[in-house]
Image (cartoon, rainbow, N blue to C red; front, side, top):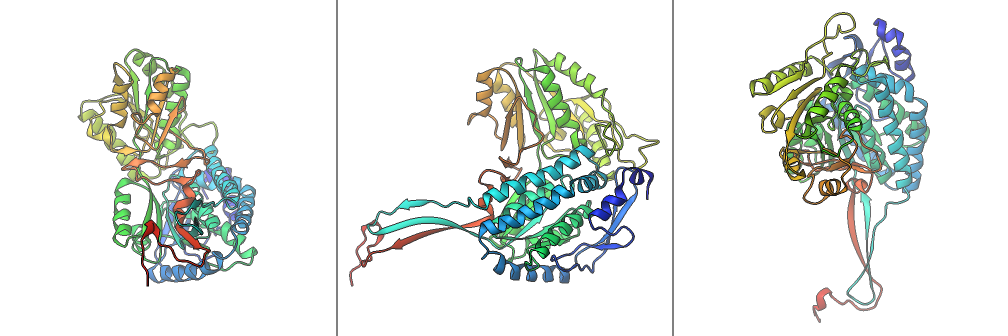
Length: 519
């Protein structure tokens, strides 16, 4: 065990979560059984480069066994009243509360985000479970008046079946819970393919869920885990037995999944890339702007889909904002994310470091100017090779590199003149449409930003940053972000099938639209 892992109690956290440190963990599970016959995936921490553990991946034979078990479990689970399913989610929630510290610690060590953010991610799991428990008594349909006398119409929602969940490394546990907590209370069973870059957090969550379902005497297959690379994801995407695929990741990945699911006329829920901007107007509170922009740009080392990529600042306050942001960057502490004195941890791996370096080279090549230098950190504490300096570059919105999402702490600073219309044109002038924000104390500007002619993103904030979301609201974006919605509001409807019912309680059979068909 590395000195960092030993100092911060990683081994104890792994044991608390039921993970085997000395042997290979199985990455395929139906709940009661764990079995894997595929290649071994080694999980190295980006914090210190140390090997955390090993997980066996899922083969085709393993996968089919999982789907068969899940299909069987669905027949039982769907007949349980929704409030009773909510009670099971409540018990799962209790386990998450009990294990919040070790799970948050594992998230931080395996993914590289700060320990505070790791705990915050587990808190998101707890929050969505609370939401789902309440939702279990509110899966409402509608009643409608029929045009025919003696008839009643209503609509109701039924569970879909198996929900396939493909999640990404940057939120290795929260996004799974957003989907599975709602899907469970809706009566669905879940098959989860976690990221191969964070396999141990997936196994840990499945351990918790399996224990809850087993203690309740429920059949295996309600919560299932599969592990592996894109080939395992393809099994899910192409499987006609899986009516809904919820996939979180890059736009490139999302397009592949969408085509595979559409080819079999399945349903997909896509949460893909973001290229999020904050508009800063002359009426902005500069102090709050700096806090929102800096956390948005460097939190999780710039590896959130809601990370702030672009800062669009009015020319009247441009220099003031620029100086304040640059000064704030000088105060950032980069290092071990388990040390709560640090602000920024590592990128997930060395491939991410290469993409970061390439982005900085590209923006200069296209005519931009780097005003806060980047670079890879070396020496004591940075042995993993995954620590980089958050960078800022002055750039133009039309630059090719600015038009793409770089999953790293690179912030593009740009200027606008005139009124809010010009800022909105820049903000909306990218293919992604996830999160957006405006900093202003001008009511007209704020309302214009939120109007139908304003931000074209799924999330539009006023006087807070782009990063982060509460589970009470539906989360997701438009354009190449995929159009999906997860978490709160009425996002639960994607996990169910809608059915319209008409009941005739007369002795006659009148037809709709007054059609006559006499025999």
